[in-house]
Length: 294
Image 1 (cartoon, rainbow, N blue to C red):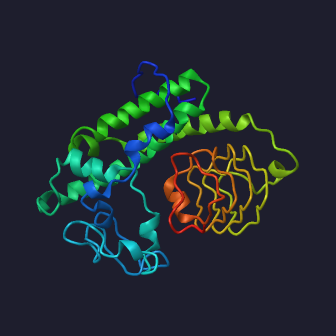
Image 2 (cartoon, one colour):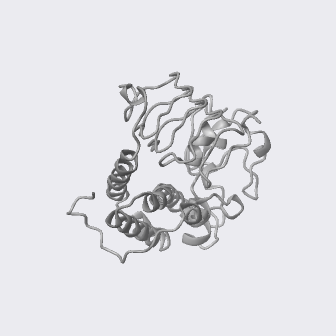
């Protein structure tokens, strides 16, 4: 449960709907964004990016109409990181909403504020993604109502003006959301009882180093892998029902034939960074990336 001293107001209880429906506005719409992800953020030359780029500067591959000149060959050209990134719909929300459709090229004096607003909105939209799921995964009316309250606070902030958004204490709000997600996770996972020795594996814990670990064909239902490092872990054929994957690093994780259809707090960027195939079962609102094997 959230701490009693929460500074946020209460709101009338609403019957939760499907998270897939609530997440429609949290999908990127690059055609209505001023390439904010290609300008606001910086990156360092690595396996994910072929060059260095300073934050606040346009990518050298950016066209005048804010499109990417190498969009169809990003991975082949060394920009795998671009194919993994997801703004959760914050790009179009900031571009068309907070800044009324006026780009940073048209109003260069305000570009720093736009970039800062985008960074904040991206964090808030990611919270909205999780809260939509928390609201329908919990059986506790109070927890569901709390999700409604937090979603309302965030929607008000990103639907207002840039100054109001930038004055919001995002870290405090993040702590409130995290507390709720942990409570919902504990509730959802408690209904699953492991068979065999899957949950006797002491490595399966929040924040665990599971890099390269062989977890093939395991029934991991109800495990708490929040914040775990699953880089290049082998999860082929495993059942991840009610497994908490909040913030887990799935880069190059092998997910061929795995069942993640009811995993907790899974995001599109996590799946974009992993490996899978057509046998991988995903939640209805998370799509298989184009680079996955058939």
